[in-house]
Image (cartoon, rainbow, N blue to C red):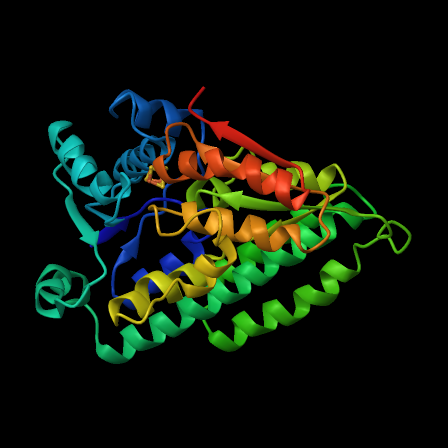
Amino acid sequence: MKVTFPLLGNTYIPIEALLQGLGHEPVTPPAGSKKTLEWGSQHSPEEVCLPFKIILGNMLEGLELGADCVYMIGGWGPCRLGYYAEIQRILLQELGQKAEFITLEVPQGNFALSWNRLRKIFEPTKITEFISGCALSWAKLKVLEDLEQLALQTRPREKTQGSASRLLAKQLKRLRNVQSIKGVWKIGQESISAFQDLVDPFSSAGTLKIGLVGEIYTVVEPFANLRLEERLGHLGVEVIRTISIRQWMKDHIFKNALGLYRQGALKRSAAGYLRDFVGGHGLETIARSVDLSQEGLAGIIHILPLSCMPEIIAQGILPRVSAEREIPILSLVIDEQ
Ligand code: SF4
């Protein structure tokens, strides 16, 4: 199958490796653009949150490139993610798209039902190829996040503005093309000294540090957040990321599927402000903001799509966190305007 999927930052790199391991041809949509947003918004319910619109735009662009299948993650809980996939499937059907739409759901105990749904995905592959595809994909995700972390640390300290972003783009291109795990680790190792070479040894003293919390899609996808991390880096700010896709997958996919995911640490950090899971990253936003307030940062930026249900709850609580923990917190709300 020629499979397209939503973009989420640079995660298309490990997703491509996984799809190839599964015996499919990845059809990666182009990076988010005005066209993506306008196309997605045009066919979306007006009041739905921004990620839905951009993701629908990604799907339409992937289909335009010849994909015959769309993969989308499912979800559950008290926010809209639970019905993203189903509504997008119906909208694509209404637009006359014949492509197959496959929703990837965490089994939540019912492994037989999940297997029936997912059988088609695994059919073209041999188990050995599947395992090596998974291993390559996981290694690429690890190094991808390491590279992004190096760029975050280097940007505010670089000798020549833009050099860290250029190096990141170059290393990501290599990472996309490499086909062995050994090659992936080599890129990761070489990048450490390559980023180090870009640092101005006299600029690091007094670098401002700002934490970034909020809804996962708008935090991770640069098109959605107007390249916030890069802009802050060029203003001399080191951004402290609190969201890792790798960690999210470990918690919400692997541990959750086995019933092992607990939110004890998050609840302990958020105690006194928010008692429980409210969908999306609402609980994480509060917990991480409390944690960051103890790390001597200059402030926190909270980023959320307009009408995002869990983050509106968090937004209502953050002024008290800010006052009691004595840390400035700025909430930035983003929509398609
Ligand atoms: S977390 Fe917010 S933006 Fe994401 S699906 Fe839920 S309501 Fe929409």
